[in-house]
Length: 584
Image (cartoon, helix red, strand yellow):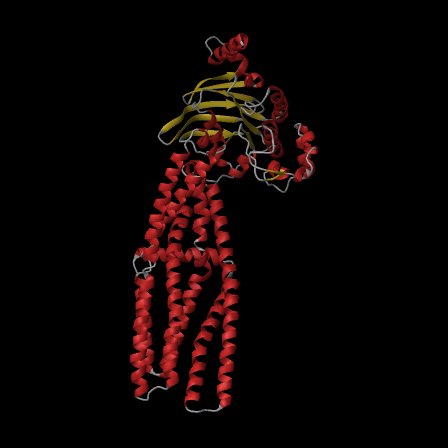
């Protein structure tokens, strides 16, 4: 066995161990049911052989009755074993695949944002669900079914060898040759299924992106173009799946040819042995019956190998996803403590791909102070916050929170101590309680109500018929102001030492904006804050100002000092803002 095949066997073995390791009882039970079914299938033709031979020589009636009765009993037992085996196999398969889905989903969540930026939501759904679904039969039946059918084949060869050694040898050669042929062509379609599944993931990614932008597509008359792209991707998927299916079904004509050879062997060898008096009529039937019985195991093995070709493609894609390593190494053990947290950037360099986003950025914010960040689009404002949260890693320099390098802090600890409020508030399909706590069942209802009332949402909450149990839907059910206040409530409940505000009130009417500003003042009390500003009015309450230009620090200092400093860029912006308001 070559290195490549050894690697594949190891990969499949590890995946089976991972999926079935915690289901030993069910796996053993399923194996017992399959073994019992194999023994029943071997025994039934033996009873009919006895029945035929007894009837042929005019044997006792009670022997015929008992043989017929036992045959019917075995058939009933076989049906019970099949039903029980099917139920247990489905249980094993779905338990294993659900566990693998969970592992893949958690692994994907741990991957850095840079990796996710290169993937669409539809593609990730196909990777986490579609590929795993294709493995359901691999987990539940493949190994045990193949083992059970091999046991059945071996049992038939042994029985026939006991009847006549030449018959047993002929069957052994036939079964061995059939298995050898099937094994030689078992992976003929694997590369084609890999390509088909990749094409399906691309299609789902395309659908996800276009459905998310449906309003823009319809408004701009791009429906025809999108439909043509959809048709092209569907045609590509059809071609690849057809190619994989045709190659996978090449196993079927091979089994037809094998059984034709098997029947020829039975009639030639059986006729010769029967004419020479070496076997009885019942044994002749037994040979024919076992060849017919072989069709089931070999057909099933063929189907299993066809499914295995699909599963093999999925296994490779699953293993490829699990092999992806995040740039966010969560190995730190430092604690940030409680209270306001200072922030410091020291000669930080960062870029998205080859493009530089931050170049030699250095500044420091003392605990409890509010920093306002100004700059044109693309100047690096949002990049600062992403580095603080370790959604990306700097290429050079250090980012500190609470005088500790963020790389030395566990990710859960870091993101628990930093709260973020942006313009876009993400609501989830769930209750008010779940949306405020982000599905944290440990937060008490009394604490939730207290925070909502403190932020001015008490009247809104009291107006809901089901209170905290009221269901919310993504993109609906709340005004923009209520949604922003809800996002502030999420941060309040976490009680972080550092808060990041990305122009949270820029899309609100003046009355709602004032209400939100009051809530923000409560949120910032006793905490350090970074306020990303797109309007000068937002900076009226900040202590320090940082102005970025093309990823570099243009100026940094106390707000009032920069405002009055000659030649200050911030002072110029403030003056321009006053003039614009005067003209308005």
